[in-house]
Figure 1 (cartoon, rainbow, N blue to C red):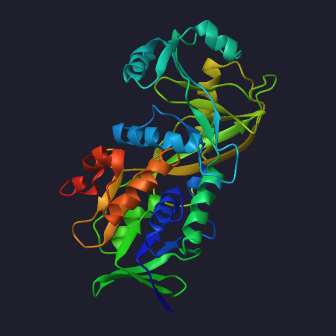
Figure 2 (figure 1 turned 60 degrees about the horizontal axis):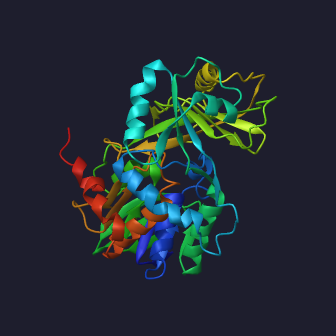
Figure 3 (figure 1 turned 90 degrees about the vertical axis):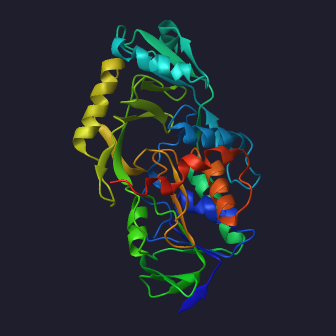
Amino acid sequence: MSQTFDVIVIGAGMAGASVAAGLGATHNVALVEAEAQAGYHTTGRSAAIWVRNYGPADVRVLTGLSRAFFLNPPADIGTDRLAVGREIIYLAPPEQTEALDGLIGQGLGIEEISLARVKAMVPALIEGYAVRAGIERDGFDMDVAALHQFYLRRARAAGGQLMLRSRAGRIERKHGAWEVETAAGVILRAPVVVNAAGAWADEVARIAGVAPLGLVACRRTAAIIDPAPYAVEHWPMVQSAVHDWYIRAEARTRLMVTPCDETPMHAHDVQPDEMDVAIGIDRMQKALDIPVRRVERAWAGLRTFSPDRSLAFGWETAVPGFFWCAGQGGYGIQTAPAAGALAAAMVKGEDPGPAAGIIAAIDPMRFRGRT
């Protein structure tokens, strides 16, 4: 069995789905996914909050450019709660005041707030933990599932094929086109392959005979607790100024807690680590007087970073027709509208608009020649 396309996108998480949707109007696209569920490993495990002041400069550009989409989404987005406002509090103990000054100094909307005001918003705040605090007022919760399904629908509506349970076992350049042979024995042909395989992106490159970039997959652990007696639905997200823990409301009556861990590991179906769960709760309890009687649920996901932690979007120069769309770290959801549009424009050779200024910074070829 063989099929011919204009573009084969490998990986149907948020990155691959958004690129496929952006290409669909002009290109015949195959969206190839190894798992039985699109977005199983990372997209489906996101903490789902949009934070402007998060990540390196290139990420912040795409985060800002994505804001309008979230606040004014297309009519067929499938939800009326794609973005629900949630402020973000940054707490600074004495040793973190310099970090807080750095956040405020970025000029991207974080401002000082009194500890008395924080206490009114978060009654569990322990007096004496922080000496200063900042607030970011334009954050919001995101409906990740609705956004992901929107992009998958758009890709399919344009004639694209979503191929689940289709792990790429062979990727080979032949006669001016790529051949991707799936585990089911189906052979796909296209002049362009987009590598949007997340934690598996370097593995996909190796299969294709392309040198890896040195991407690092890191585990991020989270747990759900009952914060009783506190009603937390309208609490802001609360985190330390150095981002070594945070909490946010979950399902209205629960709290999600994470130690913001980034433990390097191989790409696999990652599971939570009990020690990381305990560390997250301990760090939270130094700041917030919340008893934890039990952990209701814990999970982990993979966040994949390039060697310099910026994105890796662009053409591979060693072979024709191989496009990298990798290194999204923990920023892939909040940047998806602008990042998907940027990657699609780059593949098509079109003007990327206001994102053009970051193309040099995210060129994956910057890692070639590193030892």
